[in-house]
Length: 175
Image 1: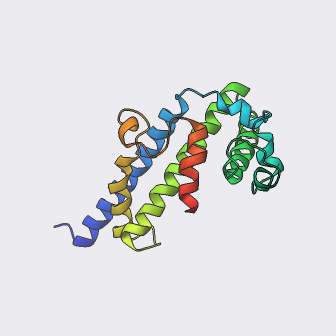
Image 2 (image 1 turned 180 degrees about the horizontal axis):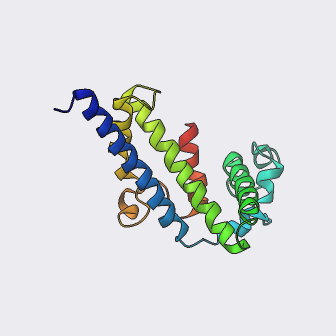
Image 3 (image 1 turned 90 degrees about the horizontal axis):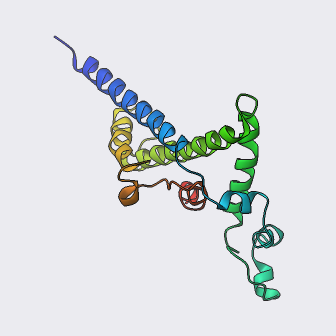
């Protein structure tokens, strides 16, 4: 006869394997999503984005009546720029430059997904302990809401666009 403790361990292990498998498959799906055109204009940055870095709090928009895109999004612009300038360089030690950009985008999306799943599981279970059964069950239940393909247009949390992932999913982590 299998003890109740053994059943809990098997269930915990099965849930952990499910979550890790889903994160791995999500990474694979994110890796094959197309890149959008905003990457270059934000990383270089283009003239319309430069004022965001020059006036992070948007004071120039008020004091000098200058209009520019996203005056309230300095943190997202800065994280986006730093993350996509840093991580591809790391990957370029192992792969070509184009693939390194795709790998970096997929990595950041799966990191956002993993952190959001963890935060939701903490809020649902009321526990910071990832080894508690309540935590792993809560995490297992929220995993299906993170759709990389298929139903992502209807119930996706991490947008296919890396720019939108940095401007919408990443701020949720800090909210």
